[in-house]
Length: 139
Image (cartoon, rainbow, N blue to C red; front, side, top):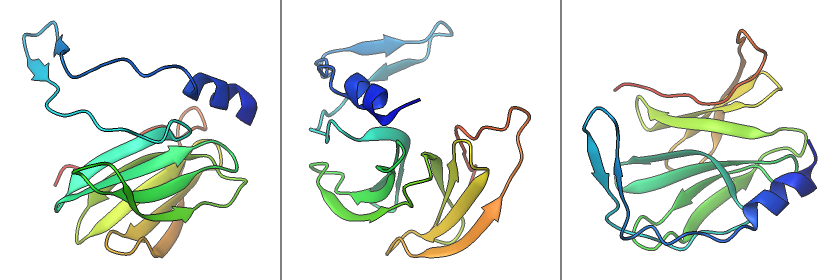
């Protein structure tokens, strides 16, 4: 995978979502309540909302970030860059104001302080296919 291929995919036009209703086959319905502008070069891998803040992790080698976004307008309130050799993947809010994030193929994970994005811990993990994609936490 090259960064160029991922960037090209992100340059596609964003559809208008505000009037779309998504229905799952089991009958659960979702309605989009709000649409916000979003940085088109961001390859969103993790997105979570907690304590009035929107948190996003983005992927791509050399472009991966962890960010706090304003939930009202989507503007970036705070951002940290990941090392260029890491491809950021899923992220979840958990526990006492913590964020947990994993990487795609590097088998590394990180725990951040959700208030200032300072890294508190690095860990390694294993999966059956050697890749990290998404992560969640049930509070």
